[in-house]
Length: 205
Ligand code: GLN
Image (cartoon, rainbow, N blue to C red):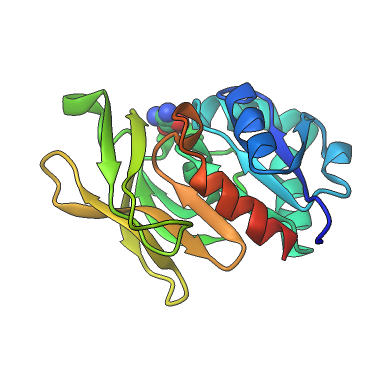
C-alpha cells in the first residue's frame, strides 16, 4: 500500500472546510495553511476559491505566495480552484486589483477574472471530462463569478474539461500541467469528489 499524502488547504479566505472534507473522503491527511512554516512536509496544497484579491492581500504580509511557489518548485503539487486558478495563472487579464501583490503563477494559461460573472453570476452545470477517474460519468460543477481560461499557451497543459458557457464560446474549465491542477469552478461544493481523488493521486506520485 502507498502512504497517505498530506495535503494543505490555504486557509486565508474562501471555501476551506469543504475542501478538507473532500480531501479526507479521497484518503488524504489535511492541514490548514496560514503561515509559510505550515507548508513544510506537504505533498500538495489546494488554493481555494473565494476572492483572489483578498487572498493575495492577506498572503502578502506573511510572504505566503513566494513561499508556496518555492515549495512547489521543490515538488509540492498544487490545485487551484476558481480564485486559486487566478493565483496560479501565469497571466491574468483585467488584473488591476491584483497589481502589486505576489501570486504563485507557474500555470501556463491566461485567465480573465469574473468573466462568467455578469450575465451568469452563479450556476451549476454538468461537464464532460477526460483523464479523471470514471470520466464517462459527467462531473457536476458550480461556477461562482468564475474566471475564464482565455488561452492555454503551454504545450504541456492538458485540457481535462472544456465547456461552452454563456456567450463566449467554448473554453477549458479544468486543466492539468504536470503536478498542477486547476478548475475555474468549485469542485468542493458538490458531492462528486473525483477531482480531489485525482489531486490526491498526483500529490502522492
Ligand atoms: N471572482 C473571484 C476572484 O476574482 C473568484 C470567484 C471564486 O473563487 N468563486 O477572485
